[in-house]
Amino acid sequence: MKLDLRALLAGECRTLPFHFALDLPDESNDPGSILYGVRFPSPPEASGEVVNSAGYMRLRLDLSLDFVAPCARCLADVAGTYRFTLEKTVATPEMLDGLDEDKVDDFAVVEDGFLDLDEPAYALLLSEFPSRVLCREDCRGLCPICGTDLNEGSCSCKTSETDPRLSPLAAVLERLREEEKAKTEK
Ligand SMILES: [Zn+2]
Ligand SMILES: [Zn+2]
Image (cartoon, rainbow, N blue to C red; front, side, top):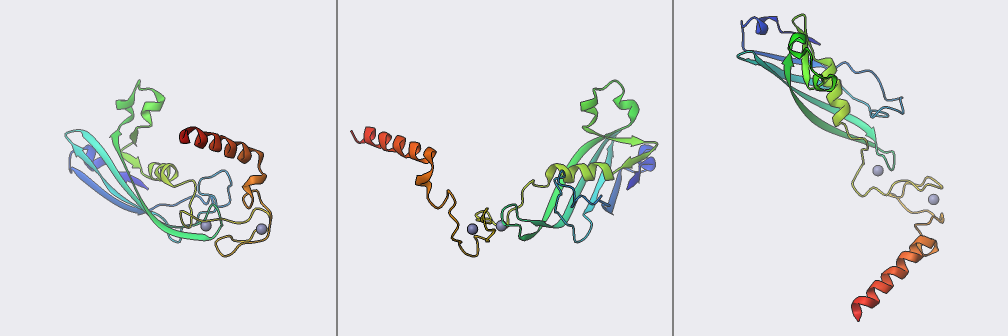
């Protein structure tokens, strides 16, 4: 959505509220995206306002969304809700003349009287959405050998977890721990 700021820039009003549904590119099939496997039952909603205080303009944008994403360990669907917020100073290209490229990213830039809100809303979503969603903090995940959901039951596969004494590293740690214990007991 492009917000028409001309009335605000002309001083005809101080506040411009907005509300729109964010039109997202579908990245659920892109393994390189943080939104891989993530579905949105309804488009995320952006709302907020641009306020002009004596020529100093601020954008506040709230993004609220419902999502369904696979648990990073057991792949079960996890449904949830998030609300992310951003605040930026609004500037015209002339105000940013001579500023470093990376500093320009801190501003929302008005072009020809209009402010593009899709780009900052989408950037907010990508920066705040967690890279891993878990069905619960202690999800035990799937057995890497047979695929059994270990939240629902155990399997008979022999993984290093079933007998940590078989691991050489674990044996070293065990010996160190015993030596440490022997020291403190003296
Ligand atoms: Zn899980
Ligand atoms: Zn198994």
